[in-house]
Image 1: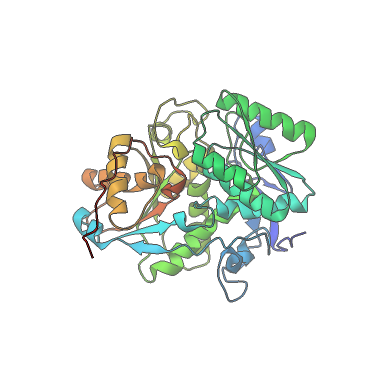
Image 2: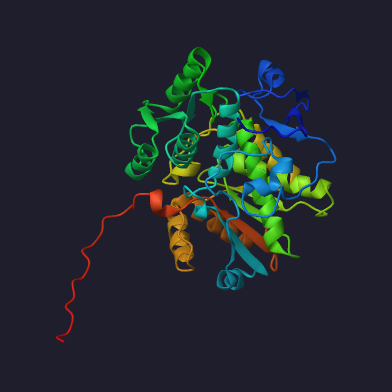
Length: 397
C-alpha cells in the first residue's frame, strides 16, 4: 500500500470547476459528462502546499508534496536531462533552444511519469488487473510498472502494432489483445472496467477525456524540472508533441503551480504539435468533441480525437497548435540525431514545429525555446529498407 498525500483535497473539473472528493473518475467530471461535455479532472491540493523535494535525491519523489501519493513504485523515472542545442538555436535565430530528453526515462518515454502514480492508485484500491488502450509507449511503460508492482497488465492494441513495441510489452509481462478499430478497443476496455473491475489507465469513452487523472498529475514534474534546469532563463515557449494532451496539460498545470507559488511571473506559451489539424481546428472554433480524421506515420501522436484538457492548456497559456508534415519530421529527426538526440518521429516533430513558427514569426527572433523529446526511437521500426553494409578487409599485419 502506498501513502496518500494528506494535502490532496480532491479532484477539480477543468471546465465547471466543481471539486469532487478523492476517488476514481475514469470518465472525467460526472457533471459535465451528464451534460454532454466529457472533461478531465485535475488533482487539487491545499493552497499552501510548497513545491519542494521530499528529501535529498533524485526522481519524481522529490516533488511528492504536489503529487497524489508520497511514495509509489519507481524504476528511476524523472530527472531527464535538458540538453542545449546551440547550433540549431543559431540557425533558427533563437537565444536558446533546448530539449527535455524524456527518451531517457526507464522505458524510453514520458509515459513513465504517469505509470508510476497510476499503478500506486491501482494497488491502493486493491485492483489486480490494470488495462490500457495503446499501440506503443503507454503500453510498454504500464506493463513495466505493473510487473514491478506485481499486478496483471492487459494492453488492448491494434493488430498492426509495431513488433518492437509488442516485444517490449510482452517482455515486461504485459498481455496483448487486439481489436480491429480504435472505437472497438475503447468499448472492450469499458466493458472490462465496468463488469470485471479492471483498473483503467487510459481513456475508454468517445468523445474522450484524458488518461487516468491520478497518473496525469505526474506530468507536472516536467515543468518543475524545466524550471530547475533552466536556471535564470525560463523558456518563453514550450513545444510538446500532443494528441489528447495528457502531457500538454500536465506541463501547463506544473507551470501554473510555479506561478501561484511565486517562482515565475508569467507562463510559457505552450505549443501542441500534431500530425494534421485537430487542435488547430478547435482553436479556430470547431467543437472539440467531433472527430478529425487523418493519416500519418507519427504513430504516437496519431488519432482522430482531442480532449478538453489540451484546449484548456493552449487557451490558458496563450498557445497554439501546429500541424506538421511527415516528410519534414523525418528530415528533422535526422537533424536531431546529428546533434546526438535520437527520437521517435513523434518526438522529433517538435523541431519541425519550431521551424514553422519561426518562419511565421509566431516565435520571435531571440526567444528562449524548450522542446519535449517525448520518446526514444529504439522502440520504432525503421521506415525504409536497409542497403547492405560495405564489407571491408583489414590490412595485413
